[in-house]
Image (cartoon, rainbow, N blue to C red; front, side, top):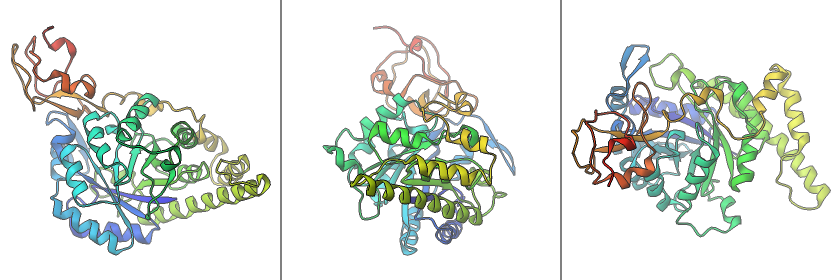
Amino acid sequence: MTIIAEIGTAHTGSISKAKELINAAKEAGADCVKFQWVYADEILHPKTGFVNLPGGKIPLFDRFRELEVNKDFFVECLEYTHGKGLLFACSPFGIKSLHELAEINPDAIKIASPEVNHIPLLKECAQYYGRIPIILSSGVSSLGDIERAVSILKSNSSDSDGDSFKKNKNGLAPLTLLHCETCYPAPESEYNVKCVKTLAEIFGLPTGISDHSMDPVLVPSLAAVFGATVIEKHITLSRNTSGLDDPVALEPEQFALMAHCARQAEAVLERFRKERSAQLNCIYRGIPEEAVMQAVSQLSQQFDKDLVIKCIGSGIKKLALSEKQNYGRTNRSLHYMHSMKKGRKILEGDIAVLRTEKILSPGIPPEFLSVLEGAVLSKDTEGGAGVQFEDFLLK
């Protein structure tokens, strides 16, 4: 099992703070650190709305703009990470950041949940399949969204069934799925951790979890006993600092507790797997019910048993209650980059694949981007507005 410390943008542009976070991740038992390669205009429109931070209310686009750093920053972070014996992963949010990231040869490319439907990004990322391990989060997504994303990412592959689980020298498979609940913080009672097992069975891929809940123990421990090959959780030096995700991240001591408990749960799973393998006289890679029962029993000494059972969930992949209002807003859709007049022909750069987020209205899905070039507007449009089919003249 690979434990990823999600640094994200908690470095706030400071290389010294980035190194402090890498050191903290190492000491807390992480195997890998993950950053985010941010270009604000790959993620949001300037009119997307505001975010409340300890320093006050500021435009969310401006906050992301403040988090932009150059390529040399990530090169130095990668080299420092490797010097500490850790793996370096990073999330791109558009085609520019993806190719710049690939140029520095990371140990893994992570596609965040809101980008599961970023079709142009996924198509570009597919060229790296089999060369650089890809990790795909699946929060605020339907089973169909995940199926399409996996299909695109593997579209250039000739893998046989067994190749999906072959790990490289760093212990990472060509493609790993992460079950996730995209809400900050995410309620443990809605996490439906059994989906780790479900997604592995449906897609035939190594599966783990990206955990945005506040507690350091419950979700990661259950994920481990349901066979998670990767556990990802945010890390921060302090929950009181100004990073976008700092309030829901784990401080180093909490992260160390998380890593310890997750590995204990993994050991429980492996013990019961060995026993089952001996009984069957073959290698058993399933999830023994005895392992789950023991985990529930142990966790129920620390948490209310009803909460533990709710956290396990049904295993049926569906939007969590806390995600439903964000489906279509946190995901990508098409938005006008600037205001345009009726009769204008759409040119490259007029429309972008963006997160809708705060106050704008979602547009049509990203897969229609290529067919809109050259289309003629049937009415005036506002910059930032979501693109709609009725905005165009019928041919």
